[in-house]
Image 1 (tube, each protein chain N blue to C red):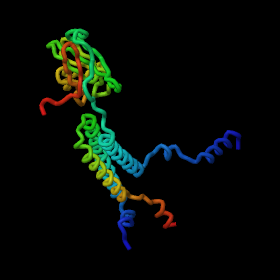
Image 2 (image 1 turned 30 degrees about the horizontal axis):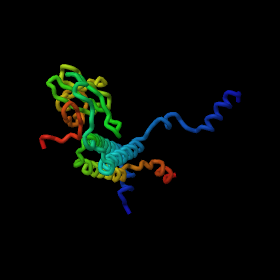
Image 3 (image 1 turned 180 degrees about the horizontal axis):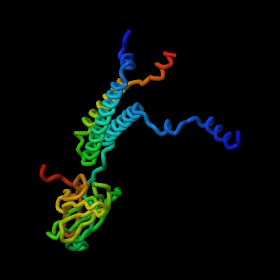
Image 4 (image 1 turned 180 degrees about the vertical axis):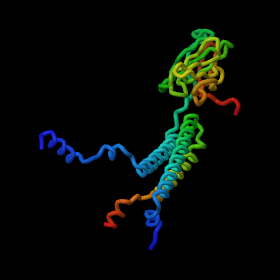
Length: 169
Length: 87
């Protein structure tokens, strides 16, 4: 037996697997794997429910000063962060003269949104999502939910924000 | 004594083939529903609608238990054992 033949036989002894056996997944194993995935999804659903009930997100408490009215021109925006929180917000001065404050994170994949002047639309550049600048509702694109909103309170020349109360209810 | 398992092992391979395919079909269906439930639960949790979360979890749990019990009917395919017996 030549040296090459000897080597060939030896590695086969050391590694006695056929290629077909190692790459083929039997239907039985596939069914078991599907059940494992099913269990994982069940645990995921449980975690979502547990997180929502046991660790609810913090709500904005009280009123917070943002800026003076003269600091923000018509059609302009101003980014701000509430003290003790890291969530970015934008304050929008709509062309109609109204103020609106929204979270600056797109509800799709948390990209930063911005206000398109003279359009009444808050736009997300990542996947072309559009929100109504008046209500925060989704107009177009992939975002699944409206933008979270803060209520704007004007006191003289000062602009404050507080947690949004749904006026319809 | 004749058991479910014994008769299943003696069944025609064509029959086992259909059983296995059906099992996998139902499992895929279950997993699809669970993905949808998880997606809906997550979206509603982020939107502060908590009513749907517990029912979605219970639904997911039931589907998992169905899938897990379903595995009992998985043909064992102990073709090799039968050949040992014959030898």
